[in-house]
Image (cartoon, rainbow, N blue to C red; front, side, top):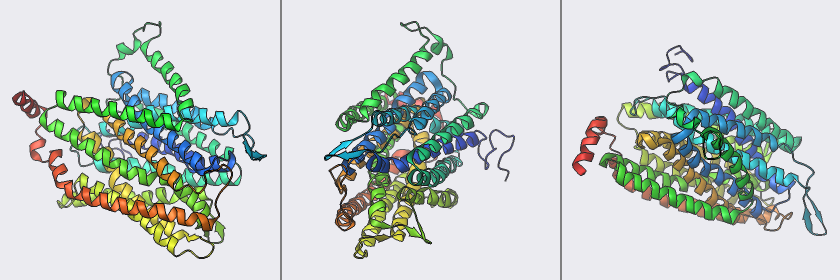
Length: 530
């Protein structure tokens, strides 16, 4: 099968041709994002001398805001900008943020028991994180929505595999950036790692712009509305761009205020939930309402998964740094580079899962989406179980073998493949068409809540609350083991409960033949209900 052909419907591994530029744009965007992610916690702890707890809360605030902003970005795209312009705006903001992270300044020092950080480099870091937060807000939900729009038929069997291919782009970028940015940052200096991430984002912007003619339904819904003058004399489009810059200023402060972020997330989640419920009960047919109910339930379950999975950026990275023997063939792998296990396994296993789901579907044996979520939660729990078992075998040096860390990441990855690409496809398939981008934003909003909760879990696994002080390996190992054991037990119980209610949720999805009758039957259902 040709990689690229002239047929817009079958141009990239048999998928619509527009998938190719979206694949490469997302690959480079994730190269920049995960390159920075690999280094951030270590950068906070080792360069700025924040305590484990402080670093975990900063990371959690940053990560949760990253996933909260797509709700707003998706809404603005649905009503005004369209997906393509929203993604372009996000990419430009991301370039600014990643380049800003390359300005590190001198390391912090302890003077008479007080942490002294060189001004203004810590604030430059927070400002750069704010640019990234707003950039992700405009880019992430919209580029994922654009993938779904490439398939005109919601029941196109290529849809789930298409999202899996797209998700491989995410992890190819993550794989190369974790190695390259992590190695450069820890070996030659933080600025080199963050600078390379910025170059990757520029490549992503270029890749996306090259595919404009292949994108389906990605332009503004009402171009004339964007050109209208607002009360301050600016066209509405430029007012949106000005608002994005203002949002950077707001997030610059928020990323430093963990408690405020938590309260804000609670308000946003409650507002989004109320809005979705109102829409479902007042604007939807019975079938649409049932599907929206399933979307909300599975989105809530994704919070459980990502809360556990996202320990990779905090407690698992510090565990690798302090309690893992990272020697391999005579080389010591930097702690940030250990995160490469996840994208490596994604790249290796992604095609297997994509092929496997199709083959199982052809035989009528594919697990329904809710059961896939149960399997995902079970596997992420088993990953922590592997780490606990490995820790029990540690010697007097309190160092676990690299094998156990790799096994933990393997189980987390197979769980991820059961949930993340499947979840993206589920949102595009079950959501009502006129609010798909917003619902994609809600999906990422759930990840925002999960990242905030992940910060709380990471604080529980903190081995120091005092800046500049870290426990010995012998002291820290029992702390990590205890928290990881609790996560293993909790995930197993939740997975069993989800498996039990899976048949009920599957029926509510209405994905059988009776649900494929088109829009007219659903309008009749709505009319009879009224």
